[in-house]
Length: 238
Ligand code: MN
Image 1 (cartoon, protein in one colour):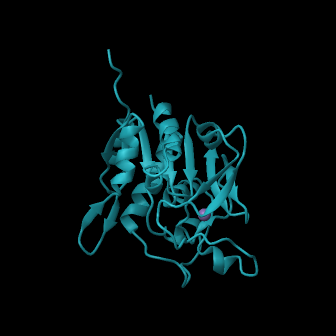
Image 2: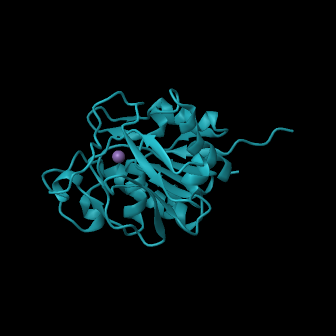
């Protein structure tokens, strides 16, 4: 008898100009290779619909993308903020809250990591270089192929990311000008870059609620070690 594959709902990006939803195939394939059944979620702010939909999935993956409207953590949008997707903000923030409240496994990648933190009451640097002036930060918007790791991260032992990778130092890619500032209640930092920037967080009482700032979905094809996080996530959805 073969066991039923966990069904993983993945949030898409939205192109407002073309009215199209999109997803990098690296997410879909990583979930499939990790033993899950990847399904793209609709973007809607109908919370009753979302609540019922989330309940039918075994896990949720919040994908990467543009910046979140700073109103969600009580700040104005400064000049150095990026593009905003209003419907996606609404949908993903509700989805993150609902998943964590119902202990549904959730993995947030880049923007998804930030969404989880904002949804639970944390804050974000709108631009790490503008808001940490005078500090020598690493290059977090890399000028190298997407799959290529450009900075190391230091992983805390006894965390989900450590349990996935079983190493205290790994190298990751970096495509973010924002990062977590104040960590939301219930979450801990599970890894940082050498310059102190938070690279992953996780909820301390959920089965699996992990956010990472890097993009393993574009790394695993070149380096299979970056499938490990997806495998850990999907196995927690069983
Ligand atoms: Mn980085």
